[in-house]
Length: 382
Image: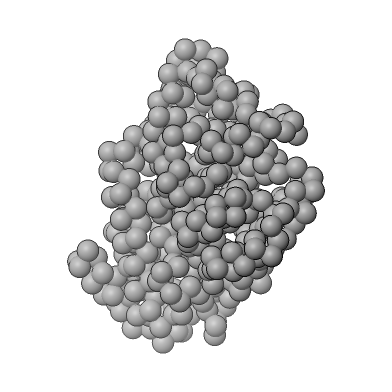
């Protein structure tokens, strides 16, 4: 009876609101029609405040990784000095994209679960003044670390370099002010805090980055951000867009606008604090110890003395709740709870209760209700 029932509490894809699902069933329209131009203009006007930019936001058919490749393919040419600041699996992926683009790649790697430190980046750029592009992941989804992009951007600008930010799992859920902080390119994806299905990459293009990109010949056709910027001024896209997803995006943006971006971000922080309090009450160590660096969109829980994947299997099979596992060297050692997008406090109480029961079924020494009580205390104090 419940073969298709799954409560998604993973860091993407995330639950899709029924309003968004309905919007995506809109009658198909021509992507070169006036109707689509009006739709795209509506979406673009709502996207800019989310990125905190006056510049263009390219709407690209693809996933977040495609958006990251677009950013690097435009800004980085073979031989360019690039620093990739890596705090987990997705930072490593960012570095891999730059390496494949022919960059002279340098990496500043941190232990998984710890955040990048601006002073380290400052020291590196002082010692390597030819490095002019820095890659940073805002929320490192594999570990739940939230890097301090504002502080990092200040350092990068002092060295007259360019900052590219992977905000795939942070945008909307965490504060990010592209223009005010002097961030040059910002990339996100549709299936995270925007609460859409996968399929859209969104790239915020700062004026300074666009000027640099225009100075050199384009090395990519599909991902040419100059073309996207030009076509947005004409209220169109270079290539065929996923029209249904753009209708869904318009509805998602309208819902965010109605709630208010600051309220959306406060909700994500509340869900984070509820989840972290619950895990601590259950005696489960958090991979990101310092709340300052804990992501508002995903919480990562260590399982030093039991198999995280066996726990996840019980949670999914017996209770229909799906949380994510660890990646690469953290495989089997952690589980990750997503709390972004179309998720509220009641959803997290359900998830925490299910986690308690799954732990109990594993024979863990857990006091049923301890996590729920701790989360409720955070909620009622909010």
